[in-house]
Image (cartoon, rainbow, N blue to C red; front, side):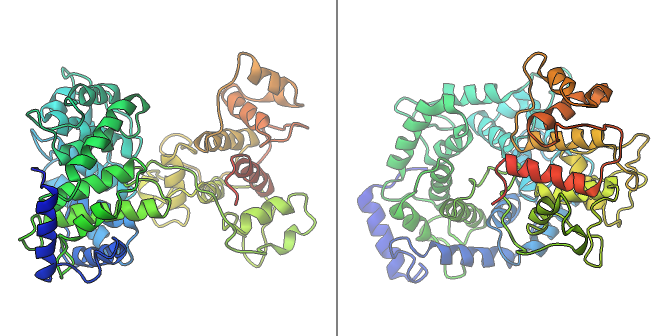
Length: 501
C-alpha cells in the first residue's frame, strides 16, 4: 500500500473526526482501544460465520484468541461450516493459492483442533510442498511459516515427486527477498507495509533472522508513521509489533481506530463504510494488542504450553486422607482442581488407579483441552465420562491404547507403565528427557527393584527417578499404581517444573 505523508494523514484524521465516523473517545491517547475491541467483536458476532475471508478464518482466529464472551456459539457454527465445506470439496481448498490452507490451519489451531484431521482431511499436508507453497512467493512462504509455528506443527512430507519444504527453507527465502534498506514486497523494490508486517510475523521466532527483523521493524515504523491509506496496513503493523514484543504506540493505535465506524466495523479506506476484510484484520490487531497488554503469548503463538496452576479451592481435602503419608500432595492437587474424589468426601488413596482415572487426572494436571473426538477406541463410548480425557491424553502422547483398537479404561495400571506416562508428561512440561551414556542404567541399578523393570519402561522410570518423581528407596515395577501414587507423582512433577503457584 502507498504510504501517506504525515501532513496528509493528519488532514485525513481531522476529516474523519469532523464527519463523526470515529467512536467517541477513540483518540484519547489511544486509550479507548478496549471499547473498540468490544464494538468490533459485537459487529463480528452479529454476522453469519462462513468459510473464507470477511467473516471466516481471520474472524474465528480473532474471536478465539480474544476469549470473547458469547463467542462459543459463533465459533461452533464456523467449525461446522468449515467441516461441511472441507467435506464438499474433498479436502481441496485451492489448487494454486496455498495460503488458503495456511489461513485455515491458523483458525483450526485457534479453536483447539488438529488441522491434520478436519472432516477426515489433512489440511496441513499441502504446506509440505515447497513448489506449490512458494508459487505465491513471499506471501506463501510467510503464511506457511506462521501456520506451521502456530501450533508447533511438524512440517508434512511432500507429495510423491514434489520438492520437500522445511521451516529453514521458508525462512531462508524470506531473508533472501529482503529489500535494500529493509522491508519486503510482493514485487518491485519499494517495501510494502502489509507484506513487511507479515514477514516480520513469520520471522519473529527465529533468532538467526534478528538483523533482518530489526531492519524490517524500523522500515515498518517508517512506512506507517503518520498513518496509512488502509485499515489493513495499520492492523498488520500492530500485529507485527505485538508479535515482536514491542509497543505499537498510541499514534499507530489511534490511526487504526480512525477507520472504525459507528456500527463497530472497520472501513478499508477513510471514506468507506464497514468492510468485512478490514474488520476482521482490525479484530485480530486489537486482539493482539489486548494479549500483549495482558502479558499473554502473541496472537499466533498457540502451541500448547503447561500452565501454572494457582489455588482455586483453598482448603480442599478429603475425609479419608487425614494422616495419610500423601495427604499434603493430594490436598495440593485438590485445591487446584486437579485431584477429584470418588464421592461422599472420599479420595480412596490406597485404591488401584484405573487407566480412565489416570487420563482424567493427567489431563487436568497439564491443563490439556478435553477432546472426546480423539478417543477413537472400540471400548471408549463417545458419551463416557472419561472419553474427553482419554482423547486428550492420547492426542498429547501421554497415553496410548492397549492394542486391537482398545484403551481398556477400567484396567489398573502397573507402576512402571504409570511412570512411563508421567515421564512423557514431564517432557511436555520442559523437563529434559535425555541421559548421559550409562546414566539411566546407573539410576535403575541404584534402586531396589530397578533390575526388574521392563526394557520398554527403563528410560521413563529412570527419568522419574532422576527428577524425584519416583522414590529411590524401592521400586515394585509390576504392582498396581495406587491413587495416592499418582497424586504424589503428579505433585512432584508439577512442583519440579515450577507449575504450582
